[in-house]
Length: 185
Image (cartoon, helix red, strand yellow):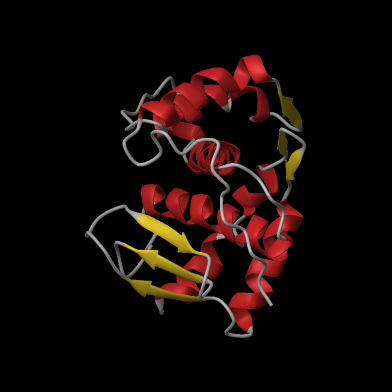
């Protein structure tokens, strides 16, 4: 199976049905990923193995491509969660909804955290723990109110995630910059 097919399969899993939350007026629901699946199917969205190897990735707004640090997801829960993160960027790019980097990343990290939680729910139900890198670790904690259903995050709830993003060298000083959504045609 190709990388793009694995991405499409990942964002078609039952765990996607658990994504239902709002950050600063932007709603994440299972339906926002349908246009991404459609654009994958028609070849508009592509994927390639690019950049440092490992559980790393990026949504490249132009030319509407996933650049991933791996060639296959193959049931790896960390890779699957990252696919959801990058697919959230793709979904809001499709909607062409302007937003800041910090809002875009908060949406993506919370979606990633919720998918990861539901993919590993039995582990967490048995009081299992996992060590996560920042800012994913903070997003995992912040996402707790949305695990059981729809939730609108308050500024107070998002503050720790915004702080973790600002502390991360990838996002430092860029939080209020435009995220770059330009639409997918």
